[in-house]
Image 1: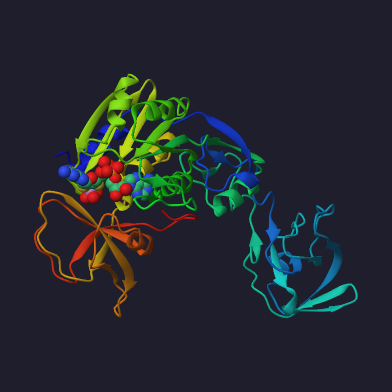
Image 2 (image 1 turned 180 degrees about the vertical axis):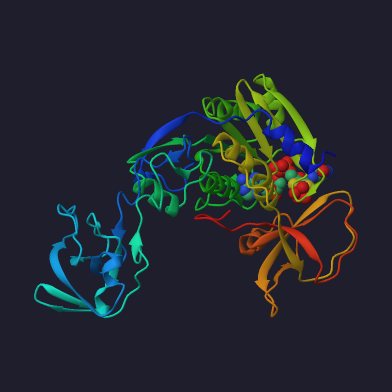
Length: 404
Ligand SMILES: Nc1nc2c(c(=O)[nH]1)N[C@H]1C(S)=C(S)[C@@H](COP(=O)(O)OP(=O)(O)OC[C@H]3O[C@@H](n4cnc5c(N)ncnc54)[C@H](O)[C@@H]3O)O[C@H]1N2
Ligand code: MOO
């Protein structure tokens, strides 16, 4: 059996970042930046005040109280035309530009105004009080957002402040999804006595969307070579085809045969993992094909491990590889040769530690449990028995604006 690490390496090998496209800022959330965002101006563009009050010369307020002549008022959106002379103050409002000659601001709470005279009662005479210096946020040409980052709402705000109306982002990978099996019916259809509801296609399409791809759900292909061949033809032109079901060793598992008949170069693997042992991977012309197992939990877990990074690589996303850990909420038996991904709930204990408690049932057909899980506990092959409270690596399932 192939290790998870080796399977990941082989699956990811043919994927490259896709071309970029231009989107408006209002469409940029969650997209992966293809070209860096840098400052197209200094921010603030000149020295501005952080408070409502009076712009003064620090030297004029060395001895307090002191009386200064109010030489004018600086309205928002206007740049002060006249300089401040010694013995003068200028009324100023938060965000307003400091006039030439002024080097500090006293807040209005520390002043008494009487006509065109202001008495400053309190205030530091160290220059720069309540002043935001030109370029203290970012400079023209300064670093903003690096290419290869998935844009957060904060990144979008920064790009806007840096004066970019449009951004270059990697185009969304188009991922075709095919369910296979004679027993399947789509949700809501009348079910015969031996039929089951096909859930995998919708779960996988949601994963593709959550990862930043564009799913193309091709529906269900019946277990006959003609139907499979027609379905495969309809995937042409996509960046990746994902199939579910028919990956195992049964006589009705025809998907590999259909792919080979179309000229695909395919490998069938047993991966040393649970759930998700049978996985296929290969290429049909220029299109990679990833065949995931039919068991619903196996399909979702293998998609998280292999489909998600493939999409991320096509997006040019710079991988986040920091592993996550939690304390075990229950004792674990020694593991066999398959790497386990146990569905588990996360909670903080009284000491503030993160605890992952595995569900008592780990059947690879139980969608109700994986839907409720917060993470997967990773148990490496041949891991020794572990006690409750031991640290274990986990794979968090939630996070970001979407959840896997
Ligand atoms: N003799 C062996 N039998 C099996 C082995 C094995 O090594 N030797 N492996 C088992 C493991 S592990 C898995 S995982 C499954 C995977 O089998 P397939 O990929 O061939 O999947 P199917 O047989 O087509 O279906 C399995 C199961 O999942 C249901 N299914 C299929 N598609 C969907 C769908 N779109 N939505 C919801 N449920 C789906 C299907 O009805 C079956 O119940 O093989 C084991 N067998
Ligand atoms: O690999 Mo299968 O996923 O254990 O049910």
